[in-house]
Length: 213
Image (cartoon, rainbow, N blue to C red; front, side, top):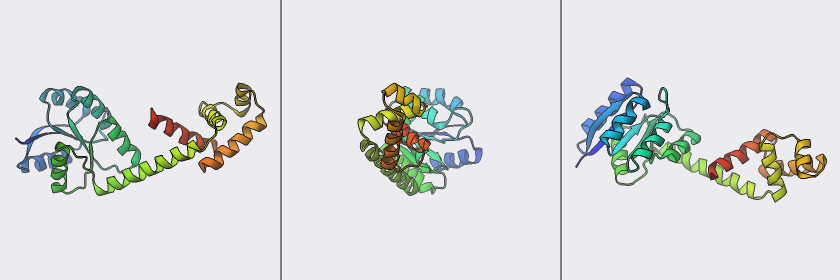
């Protein structure tokens, strides 16, 4: 049996290109194309294709939001993000939402077809550039996790207070310590996290908390 493929892409030219790629592949069958997440959700949920090719940057709801909604209704649906974006955060958000593949729009037609077949077989196809971004992203995250583990319980407590927007005096009052002690702890936090400002330290802390939630 052929693999039934739905397409969600707002650019008409790209949508037609993907449609032709699917229709030209003997092992694939075209199951509909939609220009927005809003127009795609109900038909895809009703038709239950095997694979959905989804663009990230859609008008209205994003492709990532659509993936979350589709996976809630069709847990077995395999989703491939087809996009121009290569940045780690978008890739990670897509994978967290439930996508299993991530390919760039400039990929060759045969690469997209192979990716769909691999995805349907249980694989996680990614363009070479994307795979490198994923590796780099997780390397950075692992490094941040390692740095945060070096903080003492008190330093972690102070960093959590900083992330809530409290000032040094407020933190000192909350914890029953002097402002100078807070400053000393903050200095050590900066050294251990290899940052130079409160904003950088808080960003590392918040990203780690978000990744672990």
